[in-house]
Image 1: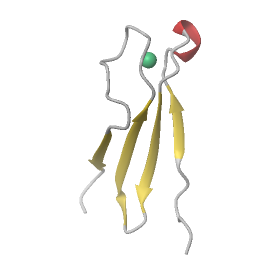
Image 2: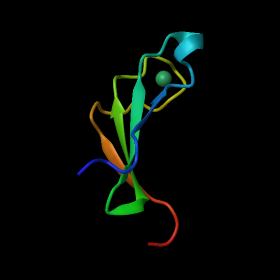
Image 3: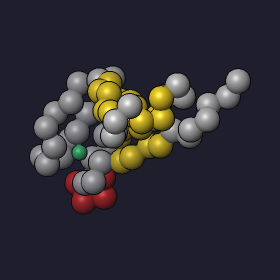
Image 4: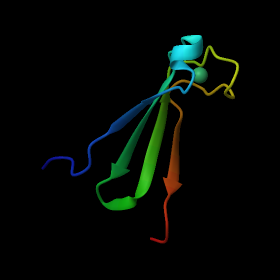
Length: 65
Ligand SMILES: [Zn+2]
């Protein structure tokens, strides 16, 4: 068994401008592609985002299940 959907990593929008090292990982759930799990990694050093706790995972439902 493998993961059907690749994980995506996103850097903070202000990575270049303010050298913010925070990233987030987005992955779909294999059993329900409409569900995205977003895990925040790192701490925002920029002043443009609300601080997130490291390792926080939020779940987003895209569309109707
Ligand atoms: Zn940031």
